[in-house]
Length: 464
Ligand code: SAH
Image 1 (cartoon, rainbow, N blue to C red):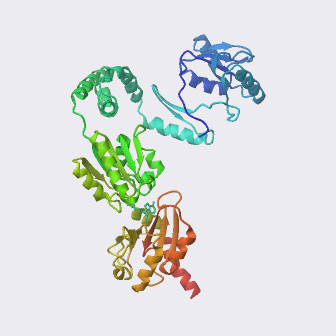
Image 2: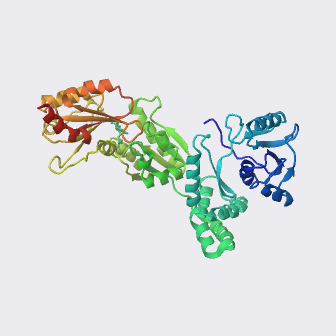
Image 3: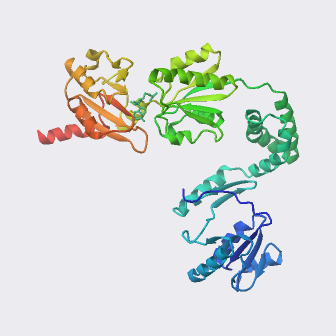
């Protein structure tokens, strides 16, 4: 991020702009939304600017920009649409100590003006660092459609009520109050009884919240899915948005953690230097500690929390301490990997059952019912199996599996850096070694990518 977004208080601050044409007009339309004292320098100004001057919305000085014109100005815009003149203005304004923007000149500017969605006092600023104005316009259009005009009214009335709400203790209680106002009571009251109705409703809501009992602490054990944030459930999103504390595993993608409420405490329990056995206890202690204080805790696990997620151990700890919990399922890696291969997990005439296996367990490489797995058409999703590929290969071949049984390794399923390594039992360990994977890998035993599966018979015919 080269440009850091901030909101500048322009009330009674001086803003100068040089130029009188279209570029100047476009910028002035935005600047005039603020409470700044605006001075325009232009020998030749558009009629709108002359009219704004007459209405005292700005002051027009009918001459070219001169040294000292930007003294005491917070911002200066060079908008003459003449590169040499803009450069001259910019250097004068800089010398006067103003922050300078040259219209359509990213490198010459100390700041840039974002696209704006205006629901005053709610303002959304959109920037692409000059890379994609088309994208900014599209996002702006989407937001304009998504944010009802009443949002501004609710925010304005709410702002006037803020000090009254200070009777509620800081933190969750206040947040619950505002949440209920903006997303339920406020819109309802505005629709039914207009602005006076909203003020009345705010008062009633505050009385309700003052007398309401504290919410008990709670732990939601939430599946974060395989990595693509769009594969999160709506429930998971909502809980992340309301969480006080998020305790997450190493595999949970950063884009998903971004969705957590800004003030939430994020605790990474995947990277700390505890040994594997003490770590689980430690997670229990953390969950209990926070929930006992009344926090809404999200225990975020990759994929589905009930698939190789040590869920039961965590539930036991919570039960022991009498802490309420709930489980929100997620999309497990096997689902994402199969989708990525264009294959289904069960298929009529091929496999009416499928298995989840783990490549290793607490005792090392995991043993399974290998004999059953070697039967034709079997499908299994092997989690944590990449390191055990040689072991799995050995066991399968020893129990009579065909060496050309397809196995596809999927690294980073559903993420942008996904890799599909199509292989067979005979070459699996070598293929995985050669791929040199760094992300999470799931082995899909019995499945090959759909493309290859459909191409294979044709190729065989050709070479027959
Ligand atoms: N609860 C998780 C699994 C946790 S075990 C779930 O339901 O998906 C961790 C293993 O899951 C990894 O070693 C890997 O085998 C698999 N895994 C998790 N996310 C993955 C992804 N995006 N792509 C491929 N494998 C993944």
